[in-house]
Length: 434
Image (tube, rainbow, N blue to C red; front, side, top):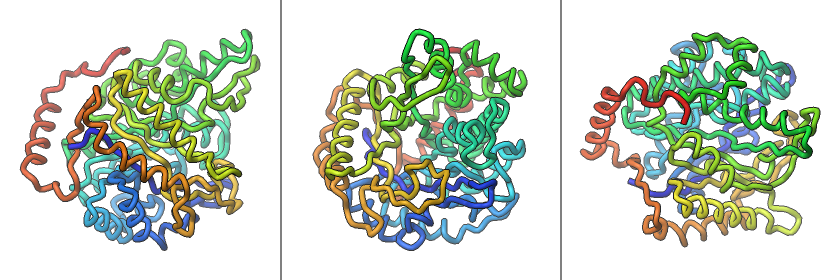
């Protein structure tokens, strides 16, 4: 049982660019395939027990019912040996070449089978992020034209979004068949759009409704009326919409939200957006998402470049942590915090849409696996706060088992209770607006 989860992550993005000819594999670029044992040692050294990590989908999922589990088997065996709890990231911004991209209507069913077969192979795994940042993935792939299908229309965006969210819902359902006490930590970008003048209020309001689309559909919440018309005008059918309303898996979820300095935007009268920097901050934007969904929260991603002075990332860490404490003190159940990722990343500064090979100093460690100042600061923060938080005023304990506890009787009892509660869950448990 855990009341707070300090986490980091292994960045496993795999989008394609240049018309699908180039695969951007961040685990390859960051040296994880070579240094994975060292990287897991670094996780332990930080005092971190939770790791956002998943198999490289493009080299693991070879076709319907066909897999190459070799690398996944050895890495997950090592996580289990070290008793590190993985939050398994099954799809991060890309799919195998044989699936194509997120315009493929077969993707949801194919991904459902992949998730089910992963869960069967690793029954000790309990925490999942089936599909990472569904809203961002659909936006960058099908509206901005940066990744994968590289399309730029509302119709393509709605197609990508509905297939991504449907795949996520089907995967959650499939995993629960295998592991009834599975917990799903959504990792979704938390956004806000600020009108820069009165003429921009209308476009900003639309964008502030649209930012909720992926989570509304995922949790079976009725979308705002303007968004309903938008979805139907751009290719979603009534039957497809009701698929989302009729699936009730919200009770198995933690609202994981990501916040970076780039998550807030200024909106001009013509609908163009510009980076605004931090205005509201994580605390206020998280309050907005919590009031909409009423789920326990986890801060699932943040980072900042080390900067010219060498202390920018450390200052950002402490600012984000202060926001996490403010969220908690305001009575919102927040279960975890994540600096993402463990090591520096490559071409993050251009959102992976160019293959420049530029190293971005965002990690807790550099690519030589030397700890950065923010790594030292995070290690100290964890040491200082790990034993204090359970005594704070808002204390929600998550029924999360360590890998070593998988066969314990309390875990078996927890699974039996989860199976029973799922069977008794009313059909309209999560329907309707919050």
